[in-house]
Length: 295
Image 1: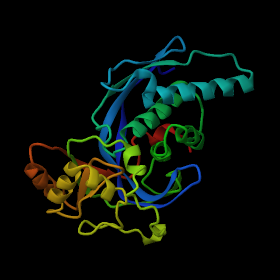
Image 2 (image 1 turned 90 degrees about the vertical axis):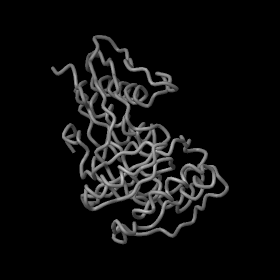
Image 3 (image 1 turned 180 degrees about the vertical axis):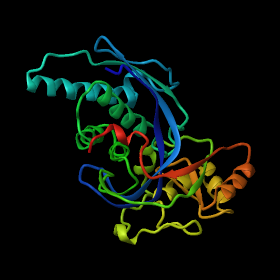
Image 4 (image 1 turned 30 degrees about the vertical axis):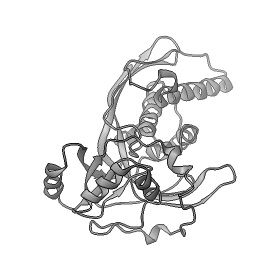
């Protein structure tokens, strides 16, 4: 029985466009977006315990252990597997783990870092605990943690609708991206609760979507709100826009620009003003841990 899984990637995502098409009676916003996986990621490390404790072995400033999506994902999976065993009349086995993380994805950046960490936790512990849950079962669990979590468990680039849980596989070009973190953290709720947010963009079809580096498809409806509230985001978009069609991902704060050639991305990266953190990332078609799931 495998007792450890180390260096498990939790990749970032970019929203190549993000339209808000309405709002449900329960307050959740209806969206359309294309999720793009990129090869910039956190790394998680898992070690089984001989008891039922879930412990985070890495301190994350500002994120208490009990509220961390990593720990919440592990506890949620533990409960699901306990119910499954009880229904089958099986004797309970220890379902504990120590979880460490090397955090690279910025919090409040719109890159899906917390959601991706949660998805990687569900995939890795389902494997280590020999839980046997399918991809669809894990996606249903993930939705309880956040609307972006099912995408990372889906494991492929996707055209997403609903609150982000309705996913269709989408192949995307092998582009390179320059991503800038403009030095601010944007809580998602500030953007979605704003009276400035438009919620009536006309729905599109997946076949309408196309991608180029000169002009990206659609827009990010959340960007106008973020720009009005956070001048740092506006400045980063303006600067990066000198090199292509720059836009914000998710609810911010990170902004990105796409390039066909790696050397073009490298040249832009060299010129990024020193007050901003910036990275180069390559488009991926599949989640690196997709092989842990059987369907």
